[in-house]
Image 1 (spheres, rainbow, N blue to C red):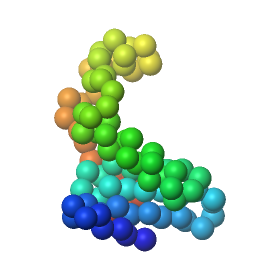
Image 2 (image 1 turned 45 degrees about the vertical axis):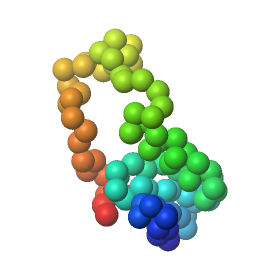
Image 3 (image 1 turned 180 degrees about the horizontal axis):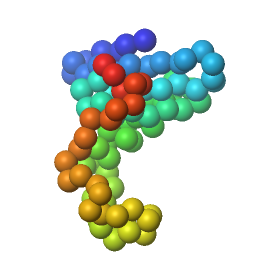
Image 4 (image 1 turned 135 degrees about the vertical axis):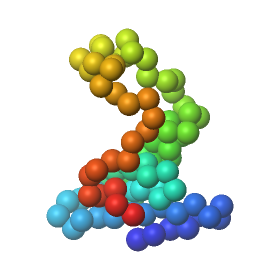
Amino acid sequence: MSVRMGSGQEIRLTNDGDSDGWTAVDVETGVASDGPTREAALENLDDAVGLHQGEHGRPVTDADLEALGVDPETVPDEPQVPDAPWFDN
């Protein structure tokens, strides 16, 4: 299901049929989230897009990555296009 918002923003909602959950994708940004219901998936997507656009949260620091056991040198500075098939437009 695709939903066009008044601002021209397009959101895709999908349910693969094998689970009870829903996935919501903001087509413009490629940001995705999920939830047990359509409403929850959309609420989670709203939070995720806000984080993506810098409206919420704070930037991840090298110290944050190191605390998670990730070498900061292996993380690209610019966002990358995910190679997961469910991100295909």
